[in-house]
Image (cartoon, rainbow, N blue to C red; front, side, top):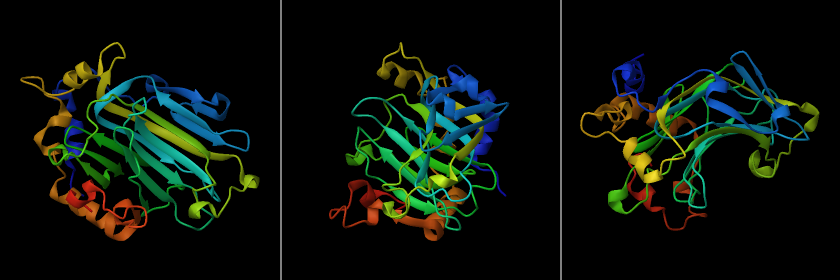
Length: 294
């Protein structure tokens, strides 16, 4: 398989400016529990989040970041996981927040897991896409990544792009590039909507539902809380001799191979796209009219 531009640049990141960059595979160096710590277990390099009828659980990064790539390897809940949601996402704070979501929607035994992605920009979401995976995500660990620079946001599964959101500010469409974002994950009960639109409820006789994690990586620009957002945006952007790896020209757009991968995923695995939902959006959302990968 050809080496992707993402993989090549991760290899060469040591030759780029390293100020403010963070990279680690250890959970406790990058993250901390955010709620229900008694439903979170960390052993060696393996983390488990547990959902039962009493509570789910979650964790969050200790810092916030602007631009770069975050990755975690997850093995999703096995067996009948209907009604459950396991999420991995980035988010800023406030009512006008930005957010990039992976949401893994539980299933009844034998049915495919669905992955829902969504983006919020300036507090506005409603950009859901759903797809099935080309493997069983409960049998082994697979990597889920979010890559973000000033040109686009890319969602990746095992380094295969599954969604591209391009900066189209030149067409009057807001793009999330000014707010530092934390990295989060959680598992919770969402049986009012998660599986077949809420028709299939959580069967608590199968509890506890356990999602397992390893391979935590944050290769991004760290943004101290003491620095204003505008100053962080400047600090995390390349200028003059200061060159960050995520601003390399080869990462300003998908390469030909990645574009073909994305088209293949959309053609063979997409089950819902907000751009095509005329019931919800009688007027096609503006970014859908302009986006190359509709």
